Image (cartoon, rainbow, N blue to C red; front, side, top):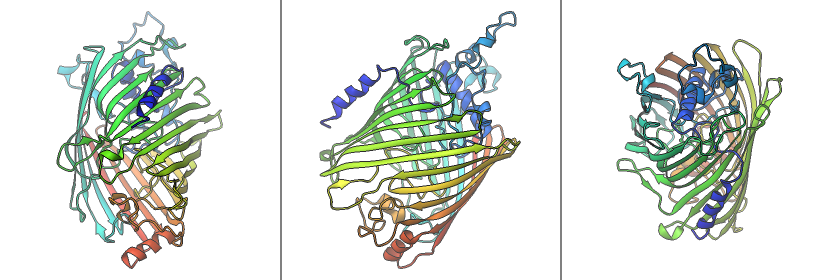
Length: 554
C-alpha cells in the first residue's frame, strides 16, 4: 500500500491529458444520451451477431459493423425527437461518430448498461411510452453442458451440469441530472453437477452493480464534430469490460460475474475523438450463499485512453494498470505490487478487407520477496471475403510469459488481472498466463439469424518449468504451486495440446437466443505427463458440448 497514494495521484494527473478513454464501447457511455446510443448499438450488435448469445463477443465481418454503428447513428441525435422535414440539419449529423469497433474475434466488450436492458419507453408497453428516464432489464440463461474427462478436474469422469443465471437491472438517468444511478442483481446456480459448488458457477442472490453517478453533459465542451464531451463520475459496486476483455471483463461466459467496489471517472465518450477512463477499485470476492464482500487488502487501479482521431485507419488505446496487495492483512498472502503499461491498437487497412488488432503489455513490480518481470501480447489479422455469407478468416497468436526458474527470486508469470478466458479456448481450459497460442478461425453468416464460427487451436507453455493454470484443480488450490499443474524440472514437456471447436448461434425470436457449441481437445505431452503423475492415467482427450438458451423480457 505504500505506493498506492502516489499512484492514484499519478492516475488522476493523467486525466488532464488529451488522450482517449476506456474500453471499446460500452462503459464510457453513461446513461444519458451517450447511453442510449450505446444501448442501441449493443442491440444492433446482438442482432447482427457481434455479441454471442453466451455474451462471448464475436465479429463476423466488416459488414456487421454497418449494423452495429450505423453511419447515421449520432448518439446525441438519437436522444431527440425526429427533426421536422422542413429542417435539414440531418445530413450534417450523419457519420459524426469517431468510434470504430474492432473486427477481431471475441473482443467486443459488453455494453453499458448490458444489452438486455432497454429504456422503459422502448419496451413496447403502451403505458410506459413516455418514460424515457428509466432503464429496465430482465433476462435468464440456461446452459446444459456435457463435459467428458474435463482436464480442469482431478476426477476424470462425465459431468452434465445445468447452469442457470438470472439477472435484473434498473437504472435512472436524465430525470434528476446530474444525479444518476443503477442497480443490477444476479442469481447464479448449478444443478446436476458431480462436483462441489464453486464461485465459477454458483452465487446466490447477488448485487453485481449498485452505484451512484454524477453526469455533466457538456463539462468538456464539444469535439470538432460538435459532439458533447461529458464528464462522468461513478462510485459504488460496478461490473464492466474494457479493451479486448482479456484484462478486465465481466466474464459473461462464466455463470458468475466479476465485480469491483470503488470509483471511476470518464472524460468524454466513445463517439469523441479522445476519451479517458480512470478507476480505483477493490475487487469483490464471491461467496456461494452469502453477500459478496470487497477484498480489503487489494486495490486495482489504472487509466485507459482512446485516441480515435484516425479511427478509419487505427484506434489507439494506451493504458496503465496497477494491482496492490497488502499481505499483512490476510493470512498466507504476500505483499504484491504489479504495474503494467501497455498499448492496444486496431483498425482496417484501407479498402483491402483486411483488419488487425494488437495488444502489447509489459509488467514489473514486486511479488513478495521476488521481483516481478513479465510480458504478454496478442496479434490478430483477418480478411473478410466479399460474399453474401460475410465469411471472415483470421489468424491469431497470443503469448504470456511464465516463470522461468522457481528459485531465482524473479517472478516471470504474467498477471492477467481480472480478464476472462473464453477468447483463448472454447472449453475454458486456457487463460492469459504462461501460454503460447496460435489459432485459425472462420466465421460466417449463412442466414439472417444464423451465425457459425469454428477454428483450430494449438497451446504450448511459454515456460515448461511453470504451471498450466487450470489443470487438475490448480486454479482452485489455496497453495500457490500445488504441484499437480507444474513441473519445476521442465521434464514433462511444454505442449499442452490442440483443439477443434465449432459453434452455431440462432436468434429464435427477438427475445430468445440459442447457441450450440462443441470442442474436442487432444492432450499434449505436458498434460498427459502431469495427469499420469497425479492420477496414474491420462485419457488423452476430452469433449465439451453445450446447448444454451437466453430469454430476455424486453
